[in-house]
Image 1: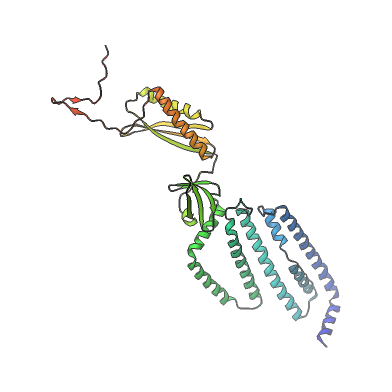
Image 2: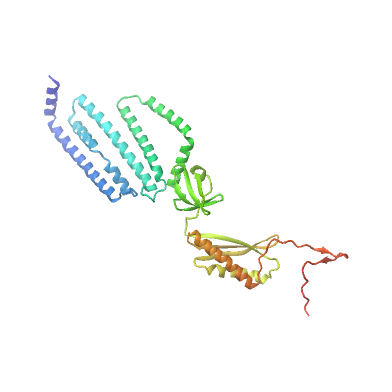
Amino acid sequence: MTELQKLTDWLWQSREALLVGTLVAVGLVGLMIIARAIGHRMVRRDPGTLGWSGVIGRVLSKTSLAFMAIAAIDIVLNYAGPPARIERLSNVAFIIAFALQAAIWARELILGVIGTRVGERPGETTLGNAMGVIRVLVSVAVFAIAIIVILDNLGVNVTALVAGLGIGGIAIGLAAQGIFSDLFAALAILFDRPFRRGDTIRFDTTTGTVEKIGLKTTRLTSLTGERVIMANTKLLEREIRNLAEGHERQETLRFGLTYQTPSDKLERVAQIAREVVEAQPGCTLHRCVLVAFGASSLDHELLFRHVGLDADVLFAKRAAIIIALLRRFAEEGIEFAYPTQTTFTAAPDGRLVMPYAAPAQPQ
C-alpha cells in the first residue's frame, strides 16, 4: 500500500474526528481573530500606549495569522490521531510558531509596561531617547529564550549553548560594567521616579532644573544658567531634594540684633516678623525666635512657608520680606548687629575707661 493510499484511508476513517477538530479549531481561531480586532481598536483608541488598555491592545493586536493557522491545524490533527510523521511535523510547527508568538507577546507586554512609565509621546518622555536601546535589549532577550525553547523541544542539547551564552554575557557585562550600571540607574529613575524632567532638584551644592534624563547621564540647567551633566549612577548615590514635590516651599532667614536692644523690643520682633511675612500673599510665618547668644549679636531665626513652587516668585517675596524687615526695624529703633569688638582701656590709676558714654544720671 502506497503512502497516498494510507493517507486516503486515514482521512476516510477519521472524517468524524476531523470534522469535530475543525469545528473546535474554527471556534478558537474565531476567538483569536475577535481578540485581535479588539486589540487593534484599543490601540487606535490609545495610540501612544500610555495606558494599560493600550498595552493589552498592542499585545492582542500582535497575534499573527500564521500562528492561528498552525494552531488550527495542530488542533484538528490532535483530534484525528494522524500518522506519526504528520503528527511530528505538526507538533514541531506548533512549537516553533507558539515560541515565536509568545516571544512577540512578551516583547510587546514588556515594552508596553515600560512605555506606560516612560511615555513615548514627544515632550512627555523621561527616557524616550533610551527606548531604542531598551527595545533592542528586550527583543534580543525574549527571542533568544524562544530559540532555546524551540531547540530544547526539538531534542537539541542546549546545555552547552546556555553555558556559552552565560559566559559571553558575563564577559560583556564586565567589559561594559560602567554602561550597564548607568543604564540600570536610568531604569531606576524611570520606575522609582525620584524626579522627572522639568523638576527642580538640589544635590550637594547644586540646584537646577532637570532638562533631560538620558541613558547614561542626566542634564540640568542650574539657577545661574550653566549646564550641569551628572552620571545617573553618581546622581542616585547622593541625597536628592526634589523641590517640585509638594505644594509649598519653606525658607529660613537668619539675622542678628545688637546686644543693646531693649528686652521689650526683642519681644516685639516675632510680632513684627509675622506682620511682615503675612503681608505677602501665600506666605505664613512658622516661627521667629531668638536662638543663640552670638559673638557680637543676638541671633534670630525666621522660618516662613510659601504656597507654590515657582522659585522666581519665592525669591521675589523673600526679597520683599527682607526689605520690609529693614524698614520696620528702622521705624522701631531695632538695630542689626555686625561683627564688632569692644576694647577697654585702663587709666593710669587702674580705672577702666569706658569706650562709650555713660548713661545720663536722673535728676
